[in-house]
Image (cartoon, rainbow, N blue to C red; front, side, top):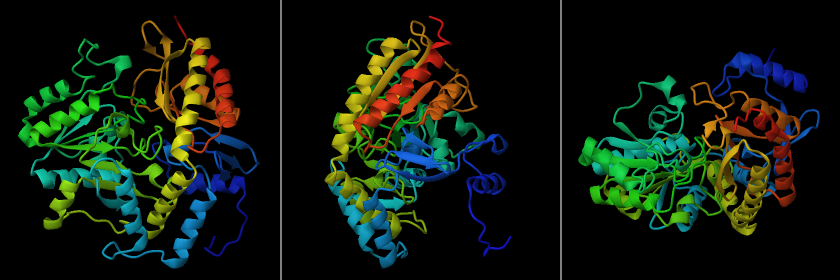
Length: 451
């Protein structure tokens, strides 16, 4: 074979070449059987045989504007014709415009942004910056968390994918999560874990708060269970951090830019971090892009101190132009409002499903960021699949996901929690279609119910 070969790309050829030469994420390569995808539009994608699938995941919870949004595609094309790349040391229109737009949308005094190729790199830089600003080295993170797959971001991550990457970076300390359905403290009243501050304060006394640079949390936990904190939780963390001079970092890679029915999840509780991490929905993933946005105080600090961070593709013009277009589309087309409205429809539909399917133990969500926890017994809350290191699709959940795909709806899960995160441009008919398929396939979970 030569690079000038013109053999047609059929589904069979795509699949064969992929199997021979491509390494897929988080997978045993010989066990994979991926569907060759030919295209997509809106909330749908399709294979080479023309079979369509409703993308009820937004792929990796990043296609907030759906597949092939014409205005977003056009913005990338126009930027490519104007300037494909210029180094991060230059001032360039698309990155300046995007940074200004983010400063106008983010809460509080969040101001300056450093652009990366994704959420992991943004989290890496946030931790490094927090250590430099404070002169401290420890970082408090949570167990049910995912912050990225690079060395530092994986050390911050709590889920089992961290294990294969250990030993990681030093200085990471863990706190428990406000998982009210399965409270790790047994949910006493008041609960020190689920109220946030008391638990964090205790950990700081063990670790010496004067050594802690930052606390990093997902305001709404994404991959690891779709966990929404109780009211007052984030405020309590904010107060403890302020008391000890610790920076608060919010990782909104999944939850940001309309996913929960607000521009940012932290807006639900009116709490502003010192550093906000975004990616995914920032430009719907059309070009790799992430952002670290910092407060006015840190912005002032950066004017007189070195920022020890940099990337070849920091503020890539194509990525930033797609970010500018994405935010304009979201405003022009009422995407955040649609997320809120369709989320209410999805939530109401899930509540009705819970009346018919005893395997549904808990439903939690806002906007189009929902988790459905499946159990063997509602009284004991025994999970449908056990927590283990082998990943998200253990039987019988894997059979449920396969059955949904066979019916034309793409779903994923983490252990026993279904993730329902469709594009924010989804319509009512598509929501109802997915609910109908869920109604059918949840019988597979009910078969394992032991209540």
